[in-house]
Length: 368
Image 1 (cartoon, rainbow, N blue to C red):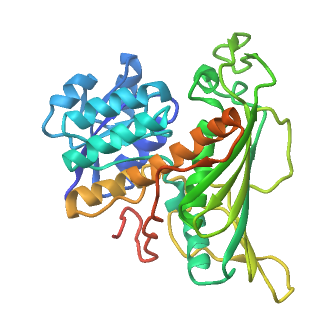
Image 2 (image 1 turned 120 degrees about the horizontal axis):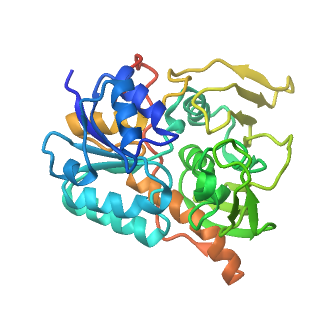
Image 3 (image 1 turned 180 degrees about the vertical axis):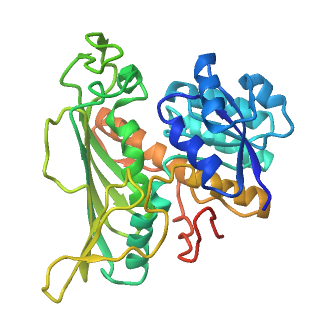
């Protein structure tokens, strides 16, 4: 099987699971080189995962062997690095979000389209066993016509565990840009394109204190809303409520539920690839756990990169592609725009639901 060479930019906290899966699990990917501003982190990754080369980002752009740039930098660097990679003729997969503004994301998609390149990004959790099973149940009519949904991601913030949490509270951070992509991508995958958005947001604290070990006691300023509440109107007619927050000590609300004319579906945590899928139908018997119909229930970050690699080899449209990531980016920016204008936000972008994952995959492959 042909392997697609990948250049990874950024060897920080999230990179380990990508390196592990792209070098050990997926059969069509090869991490050819890695880069990081901290040379020691790049050297540690090279040693641990058997990566062939350490390069600078500029060297990657000039390297003919590298076909995909995997951008794992912090959010403020997503746009400039993706733009340079696309302009150099590389396919690009980026950690979420695609960019900090809709305009930036739309520009990246335009460049990719004009150059015939693949662009896409995280999250790829919606391709995992849990949400793929939910997608199949909806497509097969088990809940009837979808009429609504709820999505909740509420925690007290990331400064208690992340070694370098400052970027979560910079512009382009916050709970919506950090965790919202998991929930919104899952909702678009399950329900389709969004037409209108309404949002309200708040920033109850202007400063945070880091309590993780590396920078314990450091005070960091908060530059973004940390509690975001919104409504979504989908093209299919369904209406969804969403809350993302870094200001909630504890909550018992479910992660996600989808409501239909014939039943209710409890969707597993969209920040994971597996998890229990629960279905209640009109027979009155209550919720029952549904066996997972697909593979990739374990942490399979990099699955979207492997799907992109398959498209590089065989042609086609990658599932975690530019249309989806741009639509989700616009939704996230729309919550703030709606509040500022005190009106509904009408979406500019449209998004077809990605092709569902095949239930015939074997581990390490992504079938078209």
